[in-house]
Amino acid sequence: MIAGGALVAAAAVVWFMASAKQRREAFAARALRDAQSAIAAGNVPLATSDLARLVDSYGGTTAAAEAAMLLARVQLDQGNAQQAVTTLRGFLDSGPADRFAAAAYSLLGAALEQAGQPAEAGGAYRQAAERWPYAHLKAQSLLDAGRAFQAAGDTISAVASYQRIVDEFPETPLLLEAKLRLGELRPPKVSS
Image: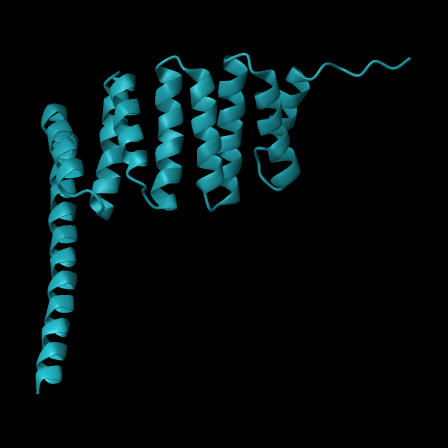
């Protein structure tokens, strides 16, 4: 009888925890929809505050991950690149799943470029390339990394990024552009 009571109590605890997690996800999803509605209505200040509150209150939920990236995108669109960098770095420090981390690193690269930090942007794009599960997104991130490194004057890293596209993603439509960029960066061979 005691063992049966303990089993029922354990099942109740498991059910309660699962139910609480589902409710939390539902509340977070509703808050995200409200913030998206505010953006659609043109009320960017309200959306920004709603998104920031959602990220703080519902961290670890799918909606909070989406909100962090949407908040950074809004900040970038408003010309606040440094705020977007701070938002994205905080999000990435929380250890999101790779599917969110890849997009966040890609957006971080764009924010760092807008903030005038091309070398750091190249590193962020490279991080995105490591996390994307799809070849075309990996190649796009490597192309972005090459462009950022080239803007920073780091020809070696730019060449490495473009060469990786040529070596690892020969089927991508970005192959031609990668080869073109490599041709621009590498001096022509001189025959004797």
